[in-house]
Length: 85
Image (cartoon, rainbow, N blue to C red; front, side):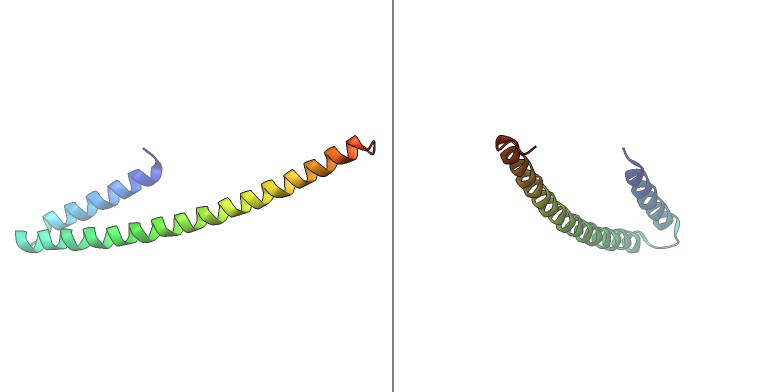
């Protein structure tokens, strides 16, 4: 388990502990937990969308770099074949 996982678990655990110790009815506490769960789910979805967007951009950059290196390697191979190393 990574550091980020630990931080998330501690944050969620602290939130739930705070709710359970607060002077509210069980119904209010359950609704608070449901609301916070939906909020966190939305934030997680947004974060995942950003990660996917960023990884797609990185993938495109890698593909472009690969094509550039491939072209340079082909040019070097052609030069060697012609005796111009």
